[in-house]
Image (cartoon, rainbow, N blue to C red; front, side, top):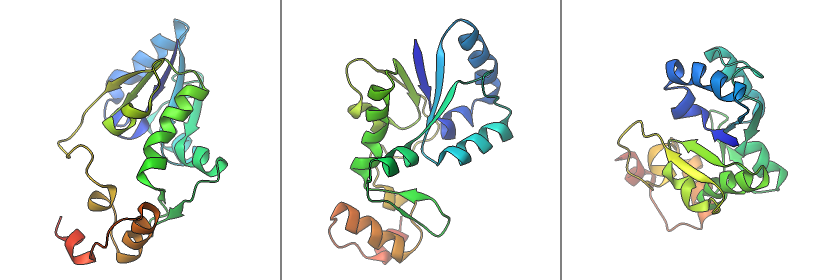
Length: 168
């Protein structure tokens, strides 16, 4: 069996549960992928900071950012160096990666990924907050007008004023 587990919102929020559980799963022959958004090196650093050890807690890191870049998907960085792409490209990436790596179960805190999984991958949602499902990314995360304009361009979105977004 192969399991993909998200880092932010899953492994970061349930360290006391996942650290021993991942060791047990690996010792029983389950292959563990850490399947998360940031670039590989950022994921690896965060895992190490949290005490997750490669070959003890997980087998391989899979980065959505690295995958999208390898597929030549249009991406950009905001002022915090966070990578962005269109919602469709981002949300569908984990499904494509799950198919490519034959992942049997994806554990994530964002339900948006579920619709892109094929029939061979089960989905487990671990919810951490009450953010509205399918809330547009720009309403929750983008912090300046340039980022909003990049977002709109990628999504061919209707005109949205920066003042409207700041209200959220």
